[in-house]
Length: 184
Image 1 (cartoon, rainbow, N blue to C red):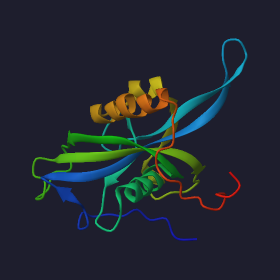
Image 2 (image 1 turned 60 degrees about the horizontal axis):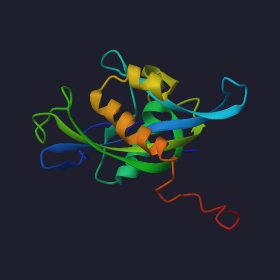
Image 3 (image 1 turned 90 degrees about the vertical axis):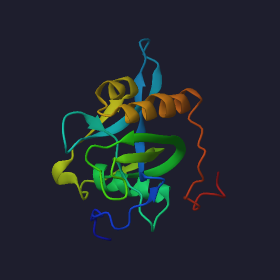
Image 4 (image 1 turned 180 degrees about the vertical axis):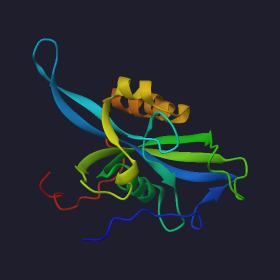
């Protein structure tokens, strides 16, 4: 098994038109529950992590590097920051924002553009690179909207994820699991 280590530094960061390119995801799972009448129903919960720079919760995200696709960066960030692995199933959109902490020579104004994905969680790791300073917690969509630290992440949840949820959560990205392709 490979050692779980977070990437650091900005030497490999991607930039475009003055924006630092970010990739992230909204990790989710289905939880079996009962409605008011006692009938079983599936409830969607999303995984959030604490911010290391202040109050509020957020979704895993980080710099998209030169040696990876946006999808690979989103999966890497989910593992490094939240300790989860799964399948990216839908592209939620690109969300521009201004960072107070990510200003550098390539983006002196701290402009960022985040490519966000829905990640269906298949595995929660007991140990992950940022476990010592990250806590993760599962929330319903309304709860997550209420405690989301950044407006752009709330927009990704409300306009991207919630719209996809309302449209039936249809998988739009190709599956990487080819082992069961003939038995479907």
